Image (cartoon, rainbow, N blue to C red; front, top):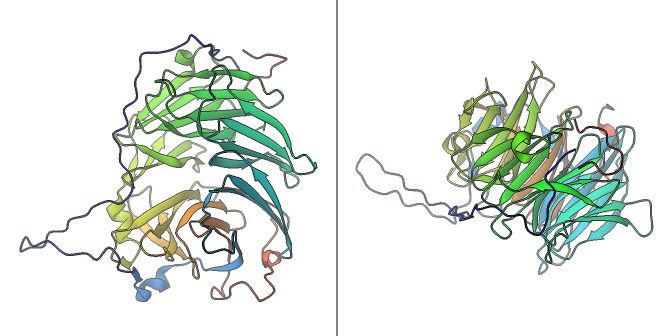
Length: 434
């Protein structure tokens, strides 16, 4: 990898001025008599049960773990990652109390919990790549400016700390990712001294390889290595730009291959790679206006935009003003995509998924996730076996599996019934790849 090397004196003239707002949106509906419709923002959403027959993939909840039993101790599940090998499932959760819990759920029986910790809020958690067994390597990134590599097999679990210490103050990280071959790390930062940085490390050394800082003007909200091409990285920012890099190039200018303008602000953790049936690479993006955009990497504009209004009206709930896009997931080898969506009013119990039909914007009901008890913030999905893992604002971790008996939840012993499921380029470098 050849990257611009960061020095104390490097700077650029770009400035950051974030005008995006987040949080509650305001809605105004006008009827034919020009009178405003009064909406009770505390009204609980009601699902139209007559539409339930159209949800074709049935799910049941087979595992539920409350992170904290103290109701006064509010802990959110901010991010999660999971791996499934055989009948075993390993789940890592990044929590709002600066810790990471790692759960082993083996053949539907007991789970063990491992606790990992940072000094500030975690921005993401990732497992190391291992296709033959559950990975013992966990990466956690934090706003404290560090990415930690943990080896769950060791008593002193933190074995490496990756950071950019070229300045007196560590840069606040906002996201990170691991390359598909497990060799390289990339992290995005908030604006730091007028620049937003992409930082790179080789995991064999904690020394910073280098970085980019000219191509984003505001906080970087997501970075993603390509799932099969370890030299390709995309980044998204509140400046509304998605950048695609070939990180084997010698300069940032040469590395930047494409820029996509979403004309919006890109949400945290809402940039994804997909592959369609022609093996073309697809990028999905969720904006701060809660619209979904789908891009071919060869196009100058999205080939599909799914507005929030379409998503809300497809959920079959009233009032439909509080829809929440949680994630986009690939559902099969053809690259079909579903949206995991919820409702962020009340306690957020309503959770469902919608299939994108014919590239959108048409949506079709897919699944209902009954007995959900929280506003869901993050999810993981494996289309090969259909498992969905969710976490959210009540600090609850759930595992959902396809089942005809969707109303059966966790049994009294707390055992998970995973055993019911079917089994299922960065260039090579020597020492310092600058």
